[in-house]
Length: 127
Length: 496
Ligand SMILES: [Zn+2]
Ligand SMILES: [Zn+2]
Image (cartoon, rainbow over all chains, first blue to last red; front, side, top):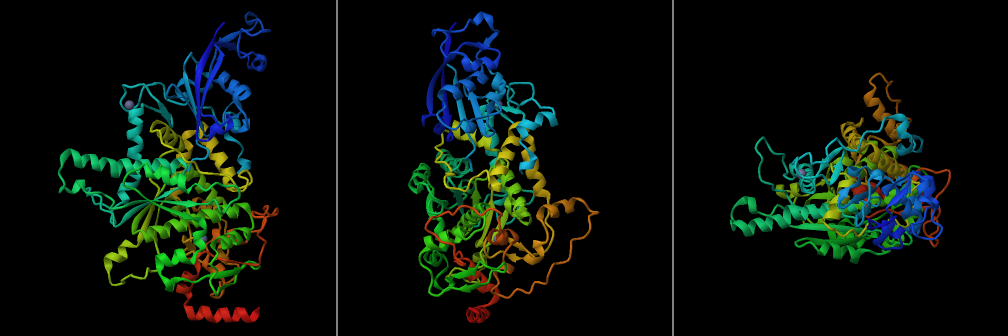
């Protein structure tokens, strides 16, 4: 089981929630449990000790919903409520995958691949 | 607004969720390229997106550039004066500046170079001067950074654009006012905040500490919402007079479709329903004349009118954000630091509501703006409000008995009973400021909140009277005549 590496960018003030850094490199498992309730205990790197038996749970390729969970639990440094709301990004936050609106790829259901570029832009302080 | 709930949580129960875009992932315009962005269910490629936004910008601005509207034949753009752009550092005005530059400065230069045809009228610059004005609020609210130099740098990236920085306390600075309108126009008014009629008197000598005046003014306001509307109003009037000062015939604001919906709904909630039209577009004429004004000069007369236009009124914040990202624009950022807690403030709640709506039902927001644009306010205009310079409705006392939300409901329901008669005759004397204010400003100064806001400044103590912005006294004096003013001031002093 492998990991995929993504470049993740934050702009429009969102970077202040992510250690004041706009550019991040993020590694997530290539496949994750279908059941989101298991994500909290799922290791970020599958090879690490104590990894649960992947054969015992139904798996799916990593998607944006999983990336949001990963960012919230492992990358975010402040005020998660300003980033996520009801399991997706807050209204007013936009996402692009490889330069295209994530709405074209199904938002949370958009599948992610190695070396994908993901951008989050906040419009909340826009004039 | 809170009773409306959060559209993103309750929406599923109310309406079936529409897909975010219509079947194809290809651009609806060129039908060839793969899409990059979804705008209200329609998919656009990057290239078609850029021309779409530029088209919406020109469509909202160009029919209003010439002093008289075009006939059936389109004529060349010939504005009566210069262009002033109100810049907040936020997304909307950053994109607006980029569009103005690319449409009227950069493109024209390229065209000139390409054809070398200097004499052709098409190649004339549309605007002789393009001026960007930024109003710094850092001294008005605690904990904010002074961003003037950062904004200056961002503006300096555009060739052919002038920069005018102001501070919000300039609104209380007799020196600033004197620079525009000359010595004769300088006078100041203090109001008594202990009664709803807001009795006022001229100050002598002038108060020459604008920052102190500003802080005392803001501290005297009864609610956080009032502080927010006061700052918005001060900024707006500063921009209007700067337009007059720079001979600008047009003042452009970076209000996006999303922000317009927010401010329309907020305005109705705060009793500014009468000014819905002005929120969308307005024509402002300064009634104070600059010292060199020649009243026989017709051309001069025309030039003093300022058209306030929001060219991004059909462009949503999402489009602005994608434009800025793809154009790699530097966003200085509109600083929210120090603003009263946005969750408690009406504007903050409205914003959450509209943002949620736009996310799940992206077409609804433009419907709100279109609907508001059709609402025509009832009642006669009785001149302009001396504080915010928007049209005021006949008699504020009478008006207080109406609620603008109800007014709009009645314009739909023709069977509704007639409005109640005025509660009392408008017998306010000249120095009673209340009769020269619009409903929204009167509310800003007098409405009481069950829970008073926390003090803005630890040092400022609440006083029973406060100095008003520099434009109030000259306009009151123009309205009631200086002699009468003096007489009532005397009366007021004897009462003391
Ligand atoms: Zn296209
Ligand atoms: Zn007013």
